[in-house]
Length: 170
Image 1 (spheres, helix red, strand yellow):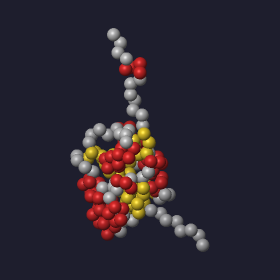
Image 2 (image 1 turned 45 degrees about the vertical axis):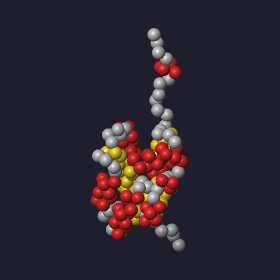
Image 3 (image 1 turned 180 degrees about the vertical axis):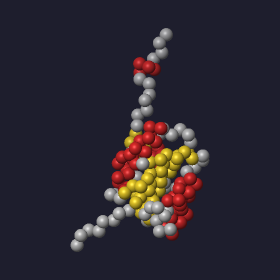
Image 4 (image 1 turned 90 degrees about the vertical axis):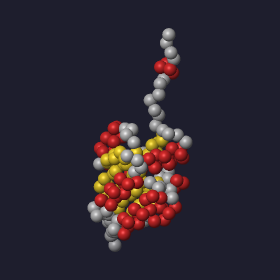
């Protein structure tokens, strides 16, 4: 008997502030970031990525980061006025009839009703988040939970001043 090939189209919706905050809390540094190059293939597990949306509150979103997401994952960074909850929810409901699976990268319990709604629409819903900071009710409601671990992020070195630059010249 030949193995059954399952073709699923997947969209990833990332609540950037929630994931960043969780990583910063766990790593004890504000310089930790998701390593999308290792995490995305792990989340997809040989399924096809249709699109990645990265929602983030505030205007200080690196254009290099946005360009990289677009080039590598057909990603779109969406700046949010306040939290990502409403824009992410609207995008998820718009996509419900166009994809097989939606992966929500967030541990926020505010998304429980969204997960319930999407599942009612026939969409497989998976959560990807840091277990320690993820609401149990959200993990319970999802079809699958992907734990984001230390292997899925890196600490970047900010381009600080060198010792020579710090010395004042009189």
